[in-house]
Length: 261
Image (cartoon, rainbow, N blue to C red; front, side, top):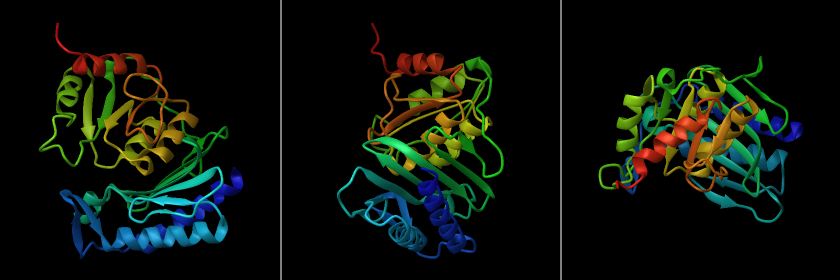
């Protein structure tokens, strides 16, 4: 795994170098006017795919922009070339490059690089999580009413009732505070870092959450689905926390979604 972690590191660094001075001059929507793509998303994914193909030949790649290339074998790379494209397109530096390696939904390697912020997060299964220089550990906060939480909202929030608004309002009342940063991979890594105590979100893609979920777990946190069951990066939902508040966070989310009566 350490060799494959190094492959992900190299790919993330090369994409970061490409994007270091990038400006989003050409922005288009992918079907939904809130779901944006820039020329830099495409160029970043091309760079990452080139590195992965050169350094780990034969492992398929599933990327946000280009879909899947390659077939066969147990392993697969999951790539988000710019997570937080809306932020990136507006010049807000809260965006990342996220690369994960999975085996049938089991995430083995994860790297999240936020070059505009100078943040780096990585993990290999069983090897702990790191910021590139020091180990990462989740917070020790044990009270939800004193916890700082983060979440996100789906692109179809204006038209779909499954928009996370009720959960947001409920937890703004129950938790210490809630934030929305606009980048799922960074949200997860801030839980691993101990700066956030918990995170929940639905309607996600595997490349949004796979790397960050592994980093949370390797930092000592807990990652499940929204009912407390097994986390699957392909299921589109996640709850991540420091572990100490996890049961209470799951319970509060359940109260919002439980029918009255």
